[in-house]
Amino acid sequence: MNIIVILFPLALGLGLVGLGAFFWCMRSGQFVDLEGAAWRILQDDDAGGPSLSDER
Image 1 (cartoon, one colour):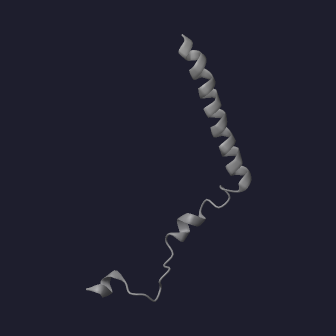
Image 2: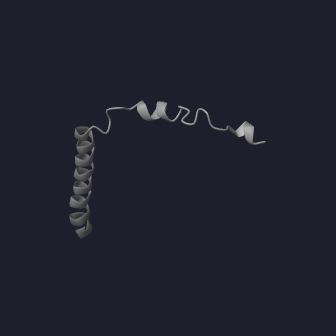
């Protein structure tokens, strides 16, 4: 029963830390551009460079 005295405040503390980190990310603009990274990975950065089919 004594372990609950330790685990309950620890669980509440970790939950509050996670909630605080979420609100910090929201305030600092981490979730502003949700589609930018998805489109950036599809762009061809080396448009004039050799492709995989040229190496054969």
